[in-house]
Each structure stands twice: as C-alpha cells, then as structure tokens.
Image (cartoon, rainbow, N blue to C red; front, side, top):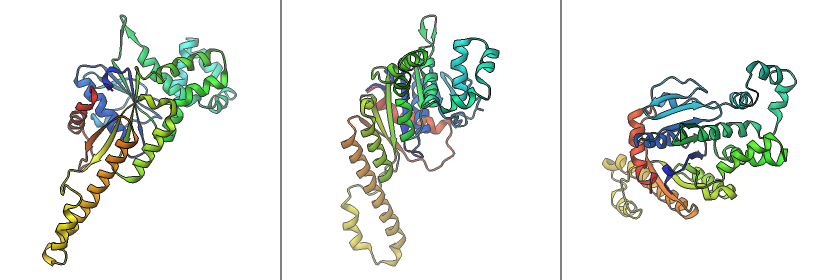
Length: 307
C-alpha cells in the first residue's frame, strides 16, 4: 500500500464524512516525515488554511506548515493557467477566450472543468527543480463520491470527445497519471454509520478501472469503546432496568451500546467489501479543529501510511 511512496493521493467520500480533515492529516503526516507536500482543495474550497490558522491565498500555493503548502483550485483559474502555458501572452488569452463567444463555449464543454482541476494536480506532480521533483507528494481533497468519480473519469471522457489534437494529448497525460496505481492512490473516507458506509461501498463498486488505486479506507469519527462485547450490555441491562436511581446511566449505556454495534457493523462491512487496509480515526469532541488536533489525527494514521 505505502501511501507515501505514491506521487499523488486523492481523498474522496460522501459529503460530510471529513474528507478535508483526512486529506490534511495525511498531508501533515507526510510533511512531518520530511516530505515536501502540496495539498490541493478542489471546486474553490478554502477550508485547509483555517485548520492551520493561516489565511487562504486561493489559487496561489501558500505554505501553512513547514514542508506543507496548499492551494484552492477553481476550474476558471485552472483553465486560464493551462491556456497561458500554451499561448504565453495574457493579453492574447483575454482577447481569444475572455469574450462573449468563447466564455459560454468553454463553460459548456463536457468534463472540461473537472479535467482542468486534475490537470493542475498533474502539473504539480511533474514540476522539477534541478531535476528533482518539486513536490514529493500531492494530496487532493477531491469532490464527494459521484462528482469525485466524474472527475477521475474526465480525462478519458475528454479523450473520447476529442479523439485527437492537443486537448486529447494533454488529457491522455493526465489519464496516464490517475490510472497508474504505482503513482496515484485513492483514499475512501466514511463514517461508522449505515448511509456513509453504503455510499462508500457503492463508490468502490462504481470505480471499475480505478479500483486498483484504492490503497486505504478511513473510518472517521470512531467513538471510544465503553461497553465492549455486544452481548455484555443486554445481559447486564436485565438486572438494572426499572431502578429509578440508575435510569440515566441505563439510557447512557443504551446509546453507547447502539453506537458500538453500529461501529462494529460499519467496520466489518467495509473490511469485507474493500480489499484494502482500513484505518480508524477517533471522534473529536469539538468541531473547531486546529493544528494540535490534526497532529493527533496524523499520528493515528501513521501505522497505515507506510505499511
């Protein structure tokens, strides 16, 4: 598996499962091990800098921690970046593409906006300084499930659409990166709940040719075990129910029991359905995450990063 031996790690999962947190923890863990890491947010998201108590500079790469820089990719900026690499002159770009005809046309090209965001990732991966990679690892906080899958397939979609020419050739370069399991890994994030687990398993099944890239699944927000074996509490409850002085404790134990059964079921289903390692991250009892929290999550991920 060895995530840190890959060039690109793409993190996806159902919305709300903590993709950004997991992507940030992976990137931080790599940076703490001496890697130089670029962490890419997609669709214009700017949540990462706040986790490091740093202001976002949008599309401009900004160091938020020693060895770790981040940027927010938007399709419009990525398109401009790509075209400027071809035509070299900004005035010519504005004349040719920033007009009433080309603007709507560029927005209507199927898959283009997903493709150019992946293209920025490819661009970062190929950068070299004195012959050495500028970035040891590029981590991508990808869109949620269905959209994330569409983004992964966008290079092939563009190749099928264009058949030949510069767009086809550039799409092929991006496609060759994302389908290469030696260079690119996928991380699927879930919560220990039925719906996120169902969606994670469904996503894996829909990945088809990308399944080989799935190197790790992460079960996020796992509560600590209080009761233990699932048969323990039902037996004990028979002797405690009905005693008024213990009613609140019984209600607490009921909730803990239900939660632990759900977590065990989620763990078992993911382990059975996904042929990859399963990491677990603890539930944090506050939502205002900061660097110290990310460091704790990065440490929790350590056993799975270079397995």
